[in-house]
Length: 352
Image 1 (tube, rainbow, N blue to C red):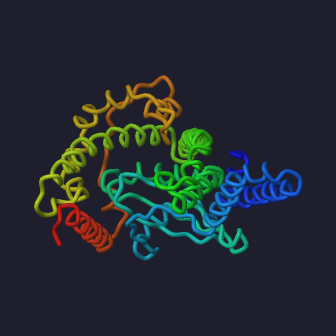
Image 2: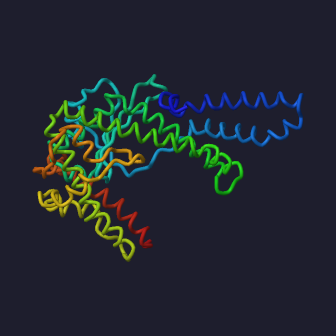
Image 3: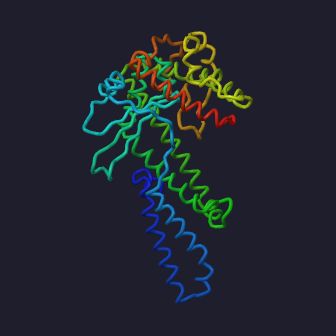
């Protein structure tokens, strides 16, 4: 089933529904020959049909995570669009460039009307990422995301993730905690779902290493190795020195604290410094890859690019947010992100 899910995505639910119909048809045939067996199998047949129908409904109602993203047109961010077009020349597909509030980047592709109306490719860049990296490191990040699209990583892994998402529809209608049918479905599917999720994580880790290698071919080995080292250390620094203290602060706050992206911007010089990178380099280097992780550990990714070389602190230039975004656009993104954060924080601390 995992093989089919990688290729058909959520539409695997159609095949499962057809199989369920065959099972129900066979169950109905038993009525004429063995009525007591028919009655005994009734709960199972109803469960199979209802579960498959819920998965079929999930094809239409697959839920995608909601993020507070800001769309940037070509006029809003010509330099960012130019980098994307240079690394991946447009081939007629529709494109969108979004900014969220994370220290991350991602790319996704959607086929419109089963591919008849072409593809829609969406590149998302995190505001914290744009603020911390320079233009050279940002190019390697965008090249990495382009690699995911070029190597069709957005097909197999996304299809499997979409199929797993349809199970959420099943458990919305039959809650495992409050319904017998949901409890039975959860018991019957638990082992398979765990294996499917582990397979999704394995595929994701493999895809990350392949995208890193693709980026190295476009931008050079040294640039990608520097990006791996810097992003690994600065991510740990931001988590330890910005986000974790902020979580504690929120527990005792009576009004919205300073937003995390503002704190990152104010402390950028400190966060990108060689001293800060060296402070966390040893910790991230010693981490190992967990089988439940969607990304390989830093050491595995770094040695995939430059085996046998120890990482070092990376010199970082002017912020890509200032270099690649017009001042007006940068200010608008900062202000809109601040409003979103303030709304969230005020709700969190009970201010209305």
